[in-house]
Structures are given as structure tokens and as C-alpha cells.
Image (tube, rainbow, N blue to C red; front, side, top):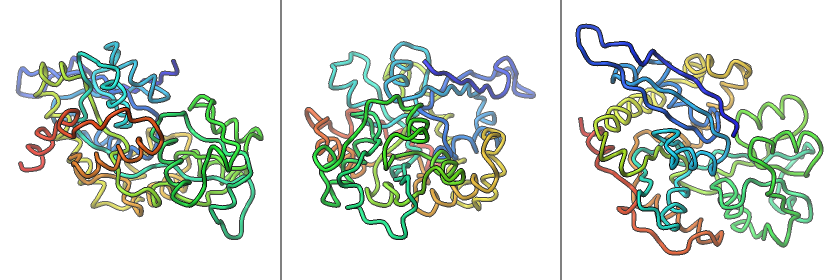
Length: 325
């Protein structure tokens, strides 16, 4: 398993003037991307630390690996697509995975073309090799949803490749595989800067509002440590509000320590792009309409066995209590 670990604050530290120790929370993120800027703002601005939490951030590449880490107890909280909680539910888990705080509300991927196109039309994807994401994952399902929305059957009208490991997709494209590829930022912009690809469309703009990436935990964790979940969500909400009211340049300055290999101009451009298409949720509440849209996309992709009620896998009480205060 590809695993990068970032530890913030010392878990043995104590709050000044109190006997309360900082609580260590292990968070697994499905990928390390500027798409998750509010999380990094919360870390860098000390919002989690203010709540008495030490965030042990681990990058687990891919939804399957992230969910495995959560179910096995390797992490406490997962940042991953909401569809994974439904998959666990469909498998009859005794300890279901519950969504409790939303981070992003649109798809975060972009369509990258190998050739520079003067004008792009979705029909340009027909008859060529399309390097997609993992089957059953949110990026791939949204990708298929958008292609079908534009009159393209990805399995019949394109040579669809979706068996490459998440972490290796960009390298495969850079090495010559495919005419089009679906990528997250900042990878898409880095390829563009290097002249190895050109961003031609946003899947986020095309797919509408959806609970794309959320924080989730096993039901047992939320029952056992509800206070920690509330503190986590409170810190996240502060970060979401901060991101909503500050410029891409200010956000870039804040998160740049966590993206040392990404230039300042690309960081600003990426954040500006995500803010413009309203990818960053301004509060942690995952509502019923978004949940319905998620299942519409899953059903369209043939990945939904049966509709799951919003209240079965989404805890809104934590987010609602944080927002009201």
C-alpha cells in the first residue's frame, strides 16, 4: 500500500493551563490533492489543534485501499468518496461506515487531451483511447455519467482503459497511453505546464452537485468517540468558512507547505479553478438531495444494488450542531 504520512502537532502535548491531552486522530485521504484544500487549511491554520486534536494524515492511494485501512482499524477517519460507504453497506457490514462531514460537492477531475485542441467537443472522445479511473470509483462513475449525458457510451464509443492503479494513471498517460485521460489537480495542470497534455473540460462543471468526498468513520467509532467527531467537524467547518472568504492566493500561501513540489502559480490556478466551480463545500452537511444524485450516478454506472436511505449511512446531527453554534 502506498502510504504517505504527515503528522501535525505532538500527540503528547497538553493544552496550556489545562490537563487535557491532545487526542491523536488518524485520517486517511484517498489522494493528496488541492481538491482537499479546506482540510489542509484546517491543519495549517491550527483549527484542529485549537480543538485539541492532532491530525495524523496518511495518504492511501485509491478508494479501495482507503476503505481497507478504515475497516481494519489502520485509520480512524477516511476522506474518500461516499460511494465506498454504500459498497460496504451492500456487503452486509455489521459495523457500517457512516458519512458525517462533507468536504467536496462536485467532481474534482478534468479531461486532459494529449493534443492541443483549438475547440473541444465531447464527440472528440469517440473512437479513441480514453484512460479512465478505477471501475466503481466516484471519478469513473461521474466520468461515465458525463460522457453519457453528452451522447457517448464510454464502453462502446471509446477504447476505455480502467485497469491502471490510481497512483499510476498520470504516468501511464505521460508515457504515451491514451488520447484522453481523466485526472485530478494539481496533476492535470502539471502535465499541461510540461506540454504533455491540455485541459479541455471539467467533469465537475458537467455533473452537478454531489457528495464527492466526505469524511466517514465506522459507526462504532462515532458512538464511542462522538466528542472527537464533533471537534473534528467544528474545526473543518472553520476551515471551510475560511476558504470560502479568502482568495486563491491566500489559500495557496496557507497550504503550500504541504505541496512543496507544486509551483505557486499552479497552486493558485488550481484553487481558483475549484473555487470557481464551487467544488469546496462551505459547510460539512451532506443533504438528502446530494445523496440522491450520488445514487443516480451509481445506478447509471450499474454499481447500485438497491437504493440506500440517506439516514442509514449519513449522520447529519454532528454537522447540524456545529453549524448552529
